[in-house]
Image (cartoon, rainbow, N blue to C red; front, side):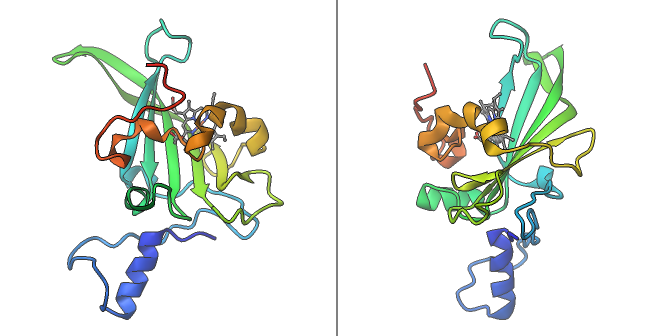
Length: 198
Ligand code: HEC
């Protein structure tokens, strides 16, 4: 079971105020349970109110077709700070990529697209200790999971190898994450990645 780091800070602060850097009145993150003893991952409650790591707009039918999906990536509280400090996400950090249909309309900015109906949620849980060797969804320092909007209570990925690996191979050298696309991790500077042909 993973408890997000900020939650541990909250309980430490409750026990002793010495060394607690949290400002009075600042909202304390609540403990978030994302996996059980066997490594079965569930969709974390309230993830859509977590900080956003970044977003993607995709034309999934091909490069010259209209944008038809938005991908919004959320990170559990404290995750951004851990990455900016150590260059890797701290154990227990949870990433959720929410995929939605889009609506589009000519607005005052141009041909604007915005998130409409939820389709699926991809979830990753950082686990540098590879704690669940017997579970095929825990590999390469992460727990991997997929949920369909039709039934968010059911995890539907079969294994890391079958459901996730091939597509994340281009980002293998950055801990399997397309991290260069998230300026908040790099002081707002765009970062060049091996998967980026620009
Ligand atoms: C069809 C290819 C494909 C498959 C299959 C796939 N991913 Fe991804 N994933 C990507 C790409 C490409 C990105 C970043 C760009 C985007 O979202 O369009 C991404 C981004 C993510 C992100 C946001 C963090 C990041 O790496 O930027 C998470 C979380 C994620 N994927 C989890 C998963 C999990 C868990 C699985 C398996 C259950 C999976 N993905 C399967 C291609 C894929």
